[in-house]
Every structure is written in structure tokens, then in C-alpha cells.
Length: 124
Ligand code: FES
Image (cartoon, rainbow, N blue to C red; front, side, top):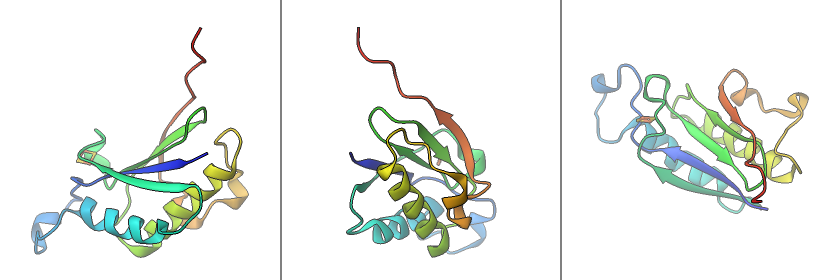
């Protein structure tokens, strides 16, 4: 089953306006996540504008049908973060429930989890 990484492409971290402002921090992270996820089985990416976690960007959501879903934030738009997000998403894809054993988490995602959403109950 596919795990989707949804990346907010409008996140701007504190101090963003002191840079060249050519791209948002979210756009930079999205490009890095997309590159890291390229060819990874079971993991796909998409971009959205705003996940309503603007004060603690950069933000991503990791979701799969019938599984625990998560939002993660406070990422810098850097390759290490992107690779950690994708590695964790691959573990989510391989998990039956969406739960991933903490001992297997990439260091880059530790301390970045913001919310966890249980899967919706089946339709009656
Ligand atoms: S701009 Fe990224 S969560 Fe709102």
C-alpha cells in the first residue's frame, strides 16, 4: 500500500525573509523530498499549500489508507531532513498499521512529530 508524503510548499521558517526569497523553505524541502523519494517503492509525494502548522514549519504529513497518519514539522529544508522523512515513510509503507518501531527511526525525524491520527473506522 502506498504511503504518501504531503509536503507544505508555502512554509517559511523564521528568518526566511533575510535570504534571497527565491523559493519558500517549503519549496526547497519539497524538491529535496521528491528527489529522495524518487524510485523508493511504496512511497509517493505531493505538494500542498499550507497544512495549518505555519508557526512550526517546514511541515509534512505521512499518510496511508487504513493506517496511523502523522504530521511532522520543524524541519530545515536540508537533504538530511528530506532523506530522514523518506526513510521513515518507507518504514510506514512497510508497516501493517502505520506504527514504526522507535528504534528504527532515522535520527533526522526524532523530535519532529507533531500529531498522530488514527485511521478512520470502516464505513458501516
Ligand atoms: S504555510 Fe506550511 S503549514 Fe502553513
